[in-house]
Image 1 (cartoon, one colour):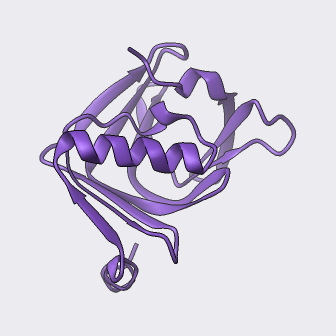
Image 2 (cartoon, one colour; image 1 turned 60 degrees about the vertical axis):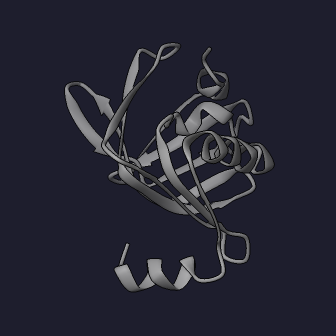
Length: 141
């Protein structure tokens, strides 16, 4: 995503700092958007921002983090900054989020509730879509 586009969408955004409040705000945004709270499983967030007008969001952390979605036996990686646009049932133009499949990391660009089955999430990466049960992305204790 172009730097100028990011700057334009940050203008007028709500910005939060500190891990606990940021995690809470990320969960609230995912719930409001009807997406599973565990989809963005980043614990050490230093800054979270959300522009209600454009749907643009960003999550900053001090260093990359990894997460394993146990129900799928899939690994995910979150860069120091994850950005994208969110609306009901989907996230688009995502950068900073990768998943590992067959020993290769793939950048996830879009996530949405599957049109054919609302109990599934579709992930788009390099023009290829793959669906998984939405329940696999619920919060893991």
